[in-house]
Every structure is written in structure tokens, then in C-alpha cells.
Picture 1 (cartoon, rainbow, N blue to C red):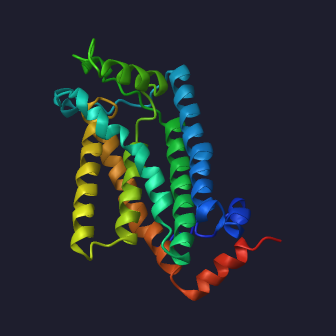
Picture 2 (cartoon, one colour):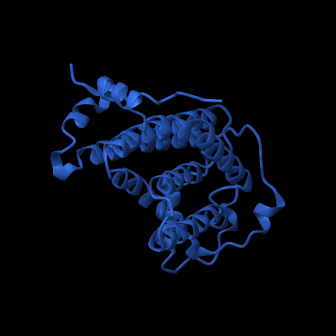
Amino acid sequence: MFLKWGSQPWRIWRSHWKGRQMLGGRRMTYAILTAMFLFAAIPYTTINRFASIRDWAAFDPTHQFDLDLPFLAWMVLPYLTLYLYYPAAAWLGSKNDIMWRQNVVFHQMMLITCWVINGIFILLPVEVDLRHLIHGVEGTVWEPIYSAMHSIDTPWNSWPSLHIVQSMQVVLILRYWYPPTTTRLQILHGFLLVMWILLVASTMIIKQHYAWDVITALAVAGLGWVYWMKPCLERLKTKEYQDEFDARMAVD
């Protein structure tokens, strides 16, 4: 099975690709981050607000595990590390031109994944009815953090968890670009995996997501990587597809 969605560079990148040596060689990085904000973050927030106003849930995936899992206020910290994953992928995919091409295609696929999941949020919304289990944050350093988070992110956009899908995609691309071939990289990989596992756990522990959201997110990210992302990235190592990429990125 081989899917090709997003495997060809989009026209929006053309001028950035041509001028990629500008801004200290980081013009593509900034273009990617801007695109993620405009075409992923803003649509997510808009749909989140729409679901909250509509106030209709397609089903209730609550399991006893979700109710019994203890709440730990400090786990909001690994939860918020998601916002370090985006710049990490955009910044570190820059070792050579092959990696830059893969960087562009990878982020296109991240955006497509986000749009597909946004479609699920609209068609089959689920309300995360777990925030009543949050306790002990009043009057603590955690209170303003949770207050801000809950005011920005209403308890919708449940499954599959974009928090997990997108962070897992970044972990997979970093492991792909920088395989653990040295002791230093093995240590960094170990640290990355520990931090990501904490992030996954945090989505449930701070009552932002159900276990159902986590399981479906892991399935989406894992299957998407094996059957879609990785094959498309692999072919960009060949001259044929590098030339095809460059031809499509040539400014008319």
C-alpha cells in the first residue's frame, strides 16, 4: 500500500524554496512554522469553538479507566511541551537538501492529517466530560495555567487526539532523520521518548482526553507513518524524485 497525498510540493512554498538561503538559511523553517499556525492551529481553534457552540456529541467514549486515573496537576508541564515539537521538526530537518525536501513534504502531510482529523471533529464530535475530576489547583501555581488552558481549549476536538498524533509524527521524523547510531544520539533518543511518553500520559492525567482518544491517535499516527509518510520520504532520496520536486518548485 502506497499513498501519495501531499508527496508533491505545493505552490505556496515556491518563493520560499527559491530564497531558502535567506534569513540565515532559515526562510523555509519560518515558512513552515507560519503555515502550521495558519492552516493547523487556527482551523483547530475555530472548530473547537464551533463544537462548543453546537454542543452536540456523536457518542460517549468514557471508560472506567478515564474516571479512575488520578489527576496530577504538574502533568500539565509535559502536556504543554507539544509546542516545542513543531519548531523542532521544522528546525532540525535542515542537514542537507534531501532533508529539506523531506521537511517540506513531511509538514504537508502533517497538515493533511490535521485536516482529516478536523473533519472527524466536525462529523463525529465528542465532548471530554472529565474536567470535574480536576481538583486541588485552586490557590496554587497551577490555577492560572489551567484557567488559561481551559479558556483557550474548550473540552471538544476529542478524538483522535491531535496532541498525540502530531507529537508522534514529530518523534518519528526525528528518529528517521537522526537514527541512534552514536551514544550521544542514543541518549537524546531516550530522553525524547521519555518526554513523549509523559506527554501521552499527560493528555489523560490532566483530563484533557479519554483513553479512546489516545488509542485512536496512536493508530492514526502509526499507520500513517508506515503506509504513507515514510514511503513518500524514502522516495525523495532518489534522484528521479528530487528532480521532480525541484521542477515543481521552480518559479515560473
